[in-house]
Each structure stands twice: as structure tokens, then as C-alpha cells.
Image (cartoon, rainbow, N blue to C red; front, side, top):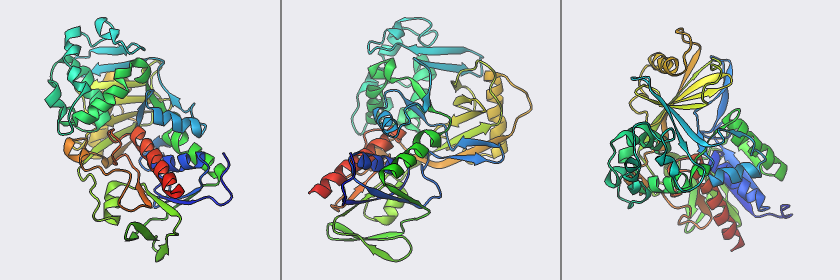
Length: 422
């Protein structure tokens, strides 16, 4: 659909995944928007950059998506980047235990009937069907319940499958994570069978998959993106936002202009002091090593008993991700690199001498996925009729994920269009 000659005005503040998603959704509907962001590059936490220490382009973190993430695939299809995700043809998850040297793979069958739990070679070694049936409580839960209120967070299935996967999804200690958010994740992925659980990784980088194609597609639709432009204040009057200040003094918001605020929660709280937002966050620590992986290694391996949690093998590097990493975020970088490299050698082999490395720490990577923090997430609609919120920290029903960020942008765009038509 071509934009109308005099399209309604939408200004999106924030060019992370939520802001880009909102812009794409609006442009797809024929509505032009302008996007501004205070950073030097778009993408927010989904950013890639050339690291001179490694001599390679790396991502700030290893962001995993699943084949059942419908919003992710809608977004990539729209911007012409549906071929930028790679992963196995089936929902196979490899694990390695550092302390014992044990290796196994969990191989989830494609269909919704989970017959894989009945087969040795597909389930966690040494487990029975009954061990999995005890986890049925993961599919429900009230808003104030944690996962440990619903299931017993012990046993081989928990320790060797559920806990590592939930920790990655929630970025919060699994047992204390929100039962409601966990249930939503389970229903949309594992509950739909292996076709919805296939792990997928951006290829060759996050920016190449999620950001650069979006910017090119938006430019072709007439949407402008201005970087290095930080919103410093906004002014409200009654039920409207009436002015925005980008450091050059207040700029009047036109009567027909709609604002989508797609910034981190602490920035939104500074701009709107009465807004209740999540205020407790969890760290993620990533490491990158400039070495070609050995031939034939799995693209992704879950690690138990080590410092690392997941090892990712890319053509030109090996990367580590640790979720809920507050216990690591203040440790010495070189010490972390040595510990991570020891895990890589134990799992994949490799030289004792550590290659060039880089540690990337995100101290406020996501909000804590607890019932208390989930209750602080605001809705997309605000008390101001021309202002809408977007971000994985808004009330998406999901933890802080790429899928949630993209859904939030779509929701804000739909409400902005409705407000303009009204």
C-alpha cells in the first residue's frame, strides 16, 4: 500500500526492536513515521559492531529466537529478511556436563503430542515419562505465583533441561520467575511441539538480520530515522503530549501528531515521573573468542557445571552467554575469559592458549521476570491520548525477549493508527 499524499504524523522515539517494529507496522499500513534515537546506531540491545580487539563483527549478545515466535517471523518476512535466521531442522538441544563429561541431546518431536518423552535417546538420560508429567504445572499459574509454587524445581529433568531453558527465556532464576510468564512461554513454544521450538540464530549478525534490512526497507517506504537525537523532556497538557524537547528547546506537537515512546523503562520513567515501570533488572554476560570452531561441532550447546551456560559456534568465532549473570557482572574480565575458555575447551576441545577475546556485560539487560516486576509493566495505552508505549518491558504477556519487543511495537502502531483515525 502506498502512503497517502498527506499521511497522519507519527513520531517514534527509540530505534530499538520495539521502535523499528512500530515503524515497520505503520509503513506496512501506508502510514509514514519519523524515528529518532539518542544512540549512534539503531537496534538498541540488538546491535552489532566491529570489535578491533577481535578483528571481527560481533553482536552485543547471543539473542536466540524460536521458530514459534510469530511476531519475529512476521517482521522478518515484511522487511525481506526471512532468510537471515539459521538453525537445526528439528528442535534438538545439545547439552554437556563439565564435571562428568556427560553429553546428551534432547530431541523434541515436531508435532504437538509429546511422544519424545517416551523415547530413550530423545529425553534426558536416566529419566522416565513420570518425571516429565510432574512438570505439568508449568502450563498454568496466577499473577502472583512463582515457578516453584507450581512445580518442584529439583530432579534430573529440571536440572538438565527445564532450568537452563527457562533461565535463558526469563533471564531470571527459574524457580523464582513468574509462573504466568513461564506459562505463556511454554504454551507458545513447547506446548505446540517441536515445530515451534526450533532454536534459530541471526545470521551472520543481529544487525544483518533485524536492523539493517529494516532500515533499508523503511527508507524505501519514506520513513526517516534520525540517530544521535535524544529526547530530553516532554510536556503534557491535560490528556495530550503538547511538546518534545530534543535539547534545542520545546518543539510543539501538532494536533494530529501521535507519539510512540519506545525507550528503556528507566528513560521512560525520567520523562514521565508518574509512570510505573519495572525497576529491578538482571544482567547478561557474553564472551567472544576469535577462533574458528572445530569442524562438526553443534551450533549451540547448553553447559552444566561450568561458568558458561550456552556456547554458540559461528563460522569465525565462538561465543558464550550467561543469563541472570549478576553473580558474574563485576568479576574481572580476564578472569571471566579464562573461565569461559576452559569451558569451551572442555566441550569442544581446542588449544590451551586462549585466543583473542572480548567480554560484553549488560548490567540492565532485562527486567527481572518476577511477579512483582511483571505487575509494574505498563500497558501500551497511556492516560495521554496521543502517547503510546512500546518495549519488551511493557505488558506484552511475555518476558523481555525480541518476540515481546516486536509485539509491543505492533501493538503501539495499531493504537496510534486508531487514535489518528479517531
